[in-house]
Image 1: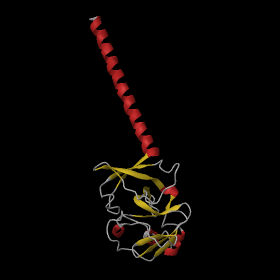
Image 2: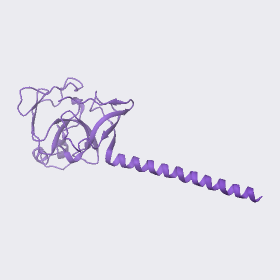
Image 3: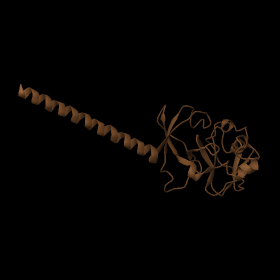
Image 4: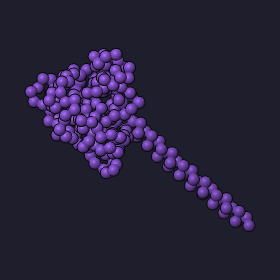
Amino acid sequence: MEETTEKKKLDKKEVIKEIFSWIRVIVFAFLVALILNKFVIVNANVPTGSMESTIQPGDRLIGFRLSYLMNEPRRGDIIIFDYPVNPEEIYIKRIIGLPGETIEIREAKVYIDGSETPLDETYVKEEWIVENDGLELKIPQGYYFVMGDNRNNSLDGRYWATEAVMTGQASTLEAAIEQKFCFVSEDAILGKAIFRYYPSFTKLNTSPY
């Protein structure tokens, strides 16, 4: 009888030990995931078609928060960032203009610093016919100008000054531009989009500028 009681006690201790072992594993995994999500990667869901055909609505992406720890963002990078007009929202767009550059949109082409040769934008979804002419902006230091690959259906740097006026954050378009609503601050960049993991695993296309 005593041996049976002792065996039950040992079995109970083993069960408790096993339970605590699993708890430690779960807590460790949770902490690792929390640290990765906070400091290393950023998850993003894509609700619109603004980045078609590179990224489709419903795609889920992984961005790398440390991409720009040693290197500056480059033209062609697809970035995940806080929307300048409403930082509570996260946007995904492609970097087109770099700090200090003057960007001009003329007849569905993008020109940098007065160059006669437009950017080679093979990633643009289709013929660009919406808001494709008459925009010229000087990009402040520490900021970037971004657009979606689906130029005919993308709420990007071409429109944000107007959005800022409509939401009462700026009194005029000129004031909105002066307040830098058209641009993405380097501090607002959450990470560089590296790959799509849903519905399929795909490395994202960036332009080789």
